[in-house]
Length: 536
Image 1 (tube, rainbow, N blue to C red):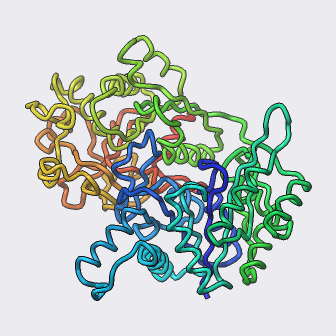
Image 2: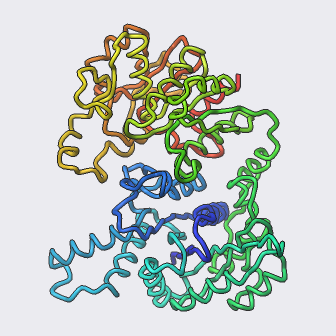
Image 3: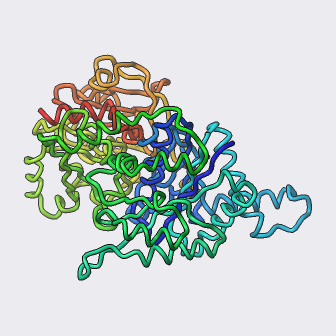
């Protein structure tokens, strides 16, 4: 029988619930079980694609093009499983499907009600994902916390599943224990309150993961154990750690895996977390650093880490792969525009990354950084918009196309070296923005003389995309004539996927987002090559 583990938030959000869910999955995998993850977001948005990254965090793109919450990236990085739209559920999706079925008379004339029809649709989607992945265990994360109004229908779905199948449905609460500075010790009262709130929805936690700035004491574990009628062994300390990749190792130190299997009624088929434990130890003991500048324009709102989480993790993975401790500097491109002397800050870094983005703000500053990298032989790696701006910079300063630009910034320009993809024109005219970009995995053929081919070691690759604009083929001849190598093309040769400067130590930019496929143990071929060049 499939086991279902629901991971819910207690006191506050953004304390690592997604990493906890991913870590639980990793531990279950290490015990020999097939696991699949689902993230349930309470937003009425159909997906995350129309939400500003500066507010909600990175938009993670799945293999099939789903634009999802950043936690799907954590699931993929920890379990090395491919996530698709089946792994992501939003309130908007659920209501949209229920209303579609009602309009099509699929309820056979019955009245359609919020309860039970909305929870039933949530349950249906969970079961679809389980069947598709043939999962022994489903780990389902609810966004937000148990005290939020919008999570009630998801809790109701979980309650209905528990009622019908009590031996196979379980709950893990991730709750923060604050440490008031004047007291100097963690306090469990907020967590006790969160447990009571979950009880009011007809549910009891089977595990409590105690997040905080330090490990919890036995006395606190005893207190929480008494409040929620749980054995003390199911109260797990989850303190802040050096790296998120320490979390599964810390959980295993608390014997979470063995206790979890005992609780849900499974036996370990194997016990293999050795690679992960070795990675955790390696990260702590790296001596040499590599300094990488991320030059972007989404630094003034939410955490940079949330906005560019996959890029950061890809840099981390590649740095560890090259036995380097990564040091990341955040450089706001608008500061370069205000004071051009600031560009000299790039002299102190080993490599430069320009991540994805949209719109015209800060782009001139980004191109200043790209020009600096090109002229000073500084390793450069451009991602999506980073490729487009690198082509514009090259066109302006090497090819002599003085007013080269992108149609995204100046749609009336006669020198659009980057222009909108033909099939995207009507989408913009109709203001049809959601899920209409070039999304998901597409194949690419590599030039055998390129650095990219050397990095991948194969001619045919597949990477994930998220864009509306591309290199204008009318300018390909002049770009190549002046030394730009079109290192990767779509199989029909109509789309430029990778550009390089052959004479440069490392000047590579991709139209796709390689960061989505980076993994902590092996890194990503292009990021590995970039960090190797930077470390020199």
